[in-house]
Amino acid sequence: MTDALISSAYSQALEVIASVEPRIAAATRQELADQRGSLKLIASENYASPAVLLTMGTWLSDKYAEGTVGHRFYAGCQNVDTVETVAAEHARELFGAEYAYVQPHSGIDANLVAFWSILAHRVEAPALANLGAKNVNELTDADWETLRHELGNQRLLGMSLDAGGHLTHGFRPNISGKMFHQQQYGTDPETGLLDYDAVAAKAREFKPLILVAGYSAYPRRVNFAKMREIADEVGATLMVDMAHFAGLVAGKVFTGDEDPVPHAHVVTTTTHKSLRGPRGGMVLATEEYAPSVDRGCPMVLGGPLSHVMAAKAVALAEARQDSFRGYAQKVADNAQSLAEGFTSRGARLVTGGTDNHLVLLDVTSFGLTGRQAESALLDAGVVTNRNSIPADPNGAWYTSGIRLGTPALTTRGFGHDEFDRVAELIVHVLANTQPGTTKAGGPSKASYALGDGVAAKVKDASAELLDKHPLYPGLELS
Ligand code: DSN
Image (tube, rainbow, N blue to C red; front, top):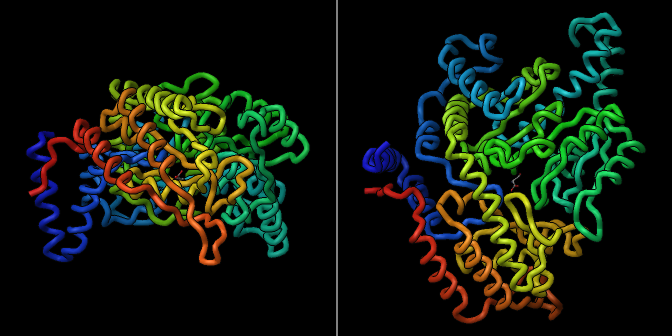
């Protein structure tokens, strides 16, 4: 697509939107300006291509298609069948998966589909077979009650939130913590690294039905072959949530033991993080789990978003191009540059560094909470998110860390020098931020004071970097 075509497509679309609700057109325009003008370091965000974005804005959105390809609860799904088939084919071939389910609307949805498919396969199916029933509707009320009790009392072992796991990996406030009898594994208190012997010991003692691996804020690679050995030893299903690092798997930066697909029974992901697709989720599975994963909609999910499945197909086609491997490698290389930029300036990183796409900066060394650091950085045009660190003294709301990722700015073309400069600017902001006090005069975990002129100076320096690497170059809105 040429720049002129893309510019014209968006300009005209915004005109159509403005004719109905100008505030939405204005907010959409402003979002582009804001994203263009800030350093986006949120590890879970990226910039999808115009082709991916344009694919989402069509009448495919108007179609209901509950069910699976060729087996829908609605008539007239032939084009949605094509869309879903193409997206699943790209996903299978890109990741070398036996089966791909592209309907989940988000990462949480993908994990819910995975949980319920594992429960269906491991708990419901054997119970039905024992009772000689084809499906749950054939059960007596008493047998159904027994089965419901069994489904609701299974064990899940996942990585704790403060060690870098995700809230859907058994965190009590999340539905995963309520659905399962859950326990969590952490990281080594000295090194911050995963201790596979400790995970194995916990698994042997707890005997989970599901062992969850994967993370949202752990700055290191995981050995999924070892996780599978642990799962096999205790009879658990290994589920890997690769939402954060799917792009590094797709781009063959994570291979062998670090590629979850050959080792896990079920792999879940989002499509909009390092994979650089539309907002959405996906489940990959072995043939064994495929029939139960296919029941995701309508068991757990509402009707599939056909326009988003179409955009997933486009993004997955992009990720199969050779250039995506170069991108993925740069994401990892840039994370190294960012980490070195911090450590060389005396900042403390959880685990001392990174070997994936993110770094976790411990801001207590600046005398700040994560919340104070996040707010001060935002004032200076640096968009990050606060994050717990292991054994966080400030809890999950204020936190003691800042999580920073390289996927988005790598898409803009940032390299080693730019990420080193980004680290310098961040250290400058944090070193010039003072924690505030509460109304009663005590130390505040939220208020802060940023030194005079710091925000303006950092914004000017960021603008220099951003101007050299424009977002959606050639896209001009009329
Ligand atoms: N919100 C995503 C993240 O930031 O990691 C995961 O839910």
